[in-house]
Image 1 (cartoon, rainbow, N blue to C red):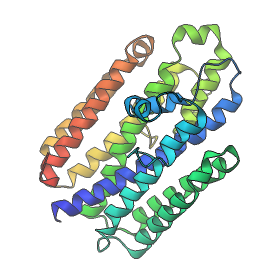
Image 2 (image 1 turned 90 degrees about the vertical axis):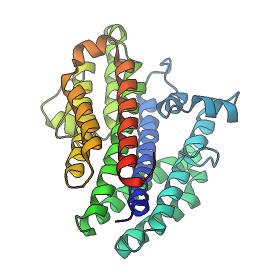
Image 3 (image 1 turned 60 degrees about the vertical axis):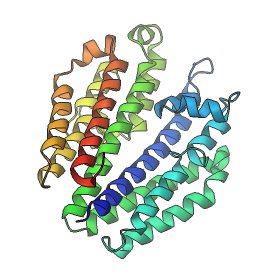
Image 4 (image 1 turned 180 degrees about the horizontal axis):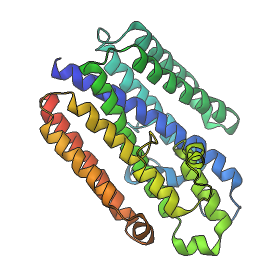
Length: 310
C-alpha cells in the first residue's frame, strides 16, 4: 500500500470519529443542562475547553460565550477546522481519493453523511432542530462504521482505518474526562452529592457508557468508580485503555511497527499503573495532559513509520 493511501485512510477514520464524538458531546450536554439546577455553574463554553480551542474561539467571538455561538463554532463554523461539517468534509475528501480501496457502499454512505450535515447543520443551531439532527448524525456515523467494518477485507487498509478511529477516540475520551470530570472536586461532591451524581452521569452519557457501566454491577455513581471505568476498562470500547489496546493489536499486523508499538505500550503501562483514587484527589488534569502528549507522540511515530513524513 502506498503511504499516501494509508494516510488518507487513517485521516478519514480520525475525522469521522472526531465529528461523531463532537456530536455526542453536544447531544449529552443538551440533555445534561436540562437536569441540572439553575444555579449550577456549567455552561456551553465548557465544550470549547474540551477541544482546547479557547484562543481561536476568543479571536472569532471575543465577547460571546452563549449557547448559539458555541454551537455554531462546533457544528458549522468554516473558520473552525474541527467543527462537525469540516470534519465530515475532510473525511469525504480522504475517502474520495481512495475510492478504489473501499466498497461502493462506504463511499455512498459517507457522501450521504456529508450532504446531510451540510444541509441541516445551520438549522441545528435552534433547540427545536438540534436533537433530531444530532441523533440522526450519530446514527449515520455508526452506520458508516458498521458498513466499513462489515465489508472491508481485514488487510492493511482495514488496520489503518481501525487504529485511526481508535487513536482519535482515545484522545477525545481523555478530553471529555478532563474537562467534564475535573470540574467536580471531591469537596464539591461532599457538599452537593445530587449535583455530582447528575454530572458524573453526564460524563458517562457523553461516551455512551452509562448502560455499560451499570451492567458491570457498578450501581453507585461515584467519581473514582466512573474514572476507573472510563480510563482503565479493558472491555468498554470507548475507554482510554481499550482504545489503545486496539491500536496495539492493529499495529502488530503491520510491518515497521516497532516504534509506534513501543509508544502505545508505554501509554498502556501508564494507564494500568495509575492510582485512580489519588488521581481523583489531585493531578487529574496533569495526567490527562501527559496522556494527550503521549497520543501526539504516538501519532508522530505512526506518521514517521508509514506516511513518509513527520
